[in-house]
Image (cartoon, rainbow, N blue to C red; front, side, top):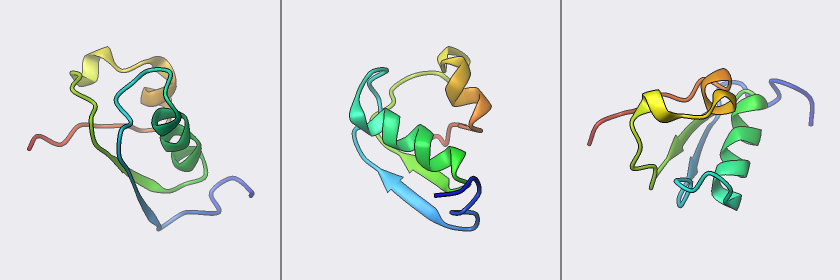
Length: 63
């Protein structure tokens, strides 16, 4: 897939709260391809996001 191939698409990924889990890896990859990614299971404050999540445009939505 080429960069930004998923522009305008939304992906929902569950279980993406672990720093080394497959859900996180999938979320980062989808975001790099241009998708807006909704993740569950983060349980972290946005100021604690790793640099690659910040670079991919992750942000928090309170629920």
